[in-house]
Image (tube, rainbow, N blue to C red; front, side, top):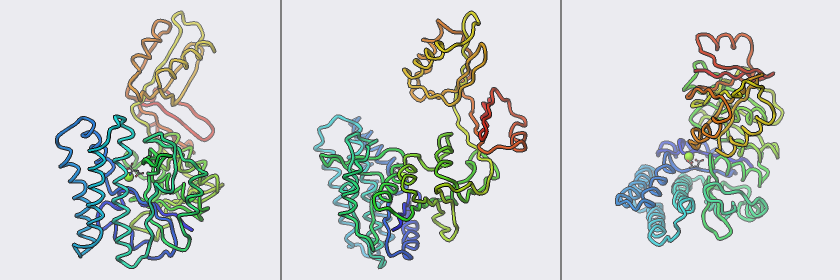
Length: 414
Ligand code: ASP
Ligand code: MG
């Protein structure tokens, strides 16, 4: 059985839902994982903010989200008395009821009880539309299948329970529609799976049913060797290994989140990334042991980095004790280290200050060390570099630091 995942950009309007139906027409059996339509998750996040801050506008804003889903449904179902409209009304009522009776002050809990409506809406509309078009399918509630702990917004999967539920709830030889991103805890409260949650859901289903493959449908041709927003002349990668995909995302490429890759890698289930509007094109496949094709340098940019150079006040060597002291502070202030370079009297670090604690970190260092730093520098990583592309890349740039390993070149640039 195959697993398909359609993201919010694919189902952002009625055209998208129709295109999804066109793709599924060719399938007799599949698990189809769907995200919230377009920016709906973001919109529900705003509902949570309005709710927590007790704002007046919440009612109208909430209603506008449901209206957006009604207007897509109006375009998909000619019949205004189609069942989908009462389903949407029931969902709106149940969320409104939750918000009026909720007593929990815990933001992450509230978040999960609210944002999941994005996926409930998108899957209800899509499943009904497919049935309407003669593509018979079963809509399941992923909360009855994917069981997790109660770490709201970043729940961890209970694999044993989930495998058992998949066995009992999903029949082969049919098309099953399921929500991405959501699950539930032991008390049956809704949980969400964190960053790129819907891709992860697809991987979880695939793992549990030993799927033959997973396909993630996107609005791009597949995985490119560089982000076209920052680099010219990008190349489509036809295939890469699981390992390469994890390496690329480690350096900052928005490929596929490692959390999604891991269950697939474990069972050697290939992952296809394909263009939603060009389904005959191959796209990119990530699978075991494949060599990268074409072998081409991959360019990755991380912005907003800090280059920090540390030396001892008396210019003595930076030795083991100093380094361990510096790292204890880095960990204390939750700063990320993306690169390290050591010389006799100076120790350089490329840092990312996710929690805006860099100034506090500096305060704790200043009494013992001489410090120089540049903020807002860029970290470029080139995987599979060669002499040619390195010299082209370096041209005209102010390079503050560079470092090479066998496969990877990294540059700090002003
Ligand atoms: N709908 C969720 C989000 O936008 C999950 C996902 O799409 O992966 O973050
Ligand atoms: Mg999404």
